[in-house]
Image (spheres, rainbow, N blue to C red):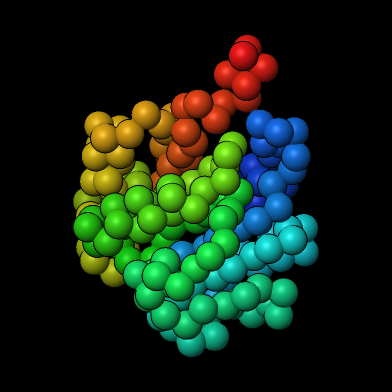
Length: 173
């Protein structure tokens, strides 16, 4: 079974943005020992990770912030090509993290949402996926975005991109 970490790494390593540049910056919300950012630290110019657990990442190439995502967004000045949301698994906080992330996403960028397709009801407990999976319906209703939810591993993974950031729209102008 392919993991969400491997999926994200593979996609971002080979992704090309609308301006034909590679993806070079990554933000991980909910580091869980840097499970995603550690893999990208060697190939990206900017990798930041946020978690309330001290020393949640193991790489010295990652700028780590030991704080809540709300605190991070209040002080952040960077923008990112890709963002992985896997901090708090409570619906309202995930939606807030998504909205904040969309504001700092570079043109052509991608947001990954973890825990969006739990394989069974037992995975909706607060210490697993919680009710974070519910944000997908709101995102589809409120925003003009392309979304695909993949049944990767037990929690699932959703990939989000602005519709107007699709490369085909750029060369059709």
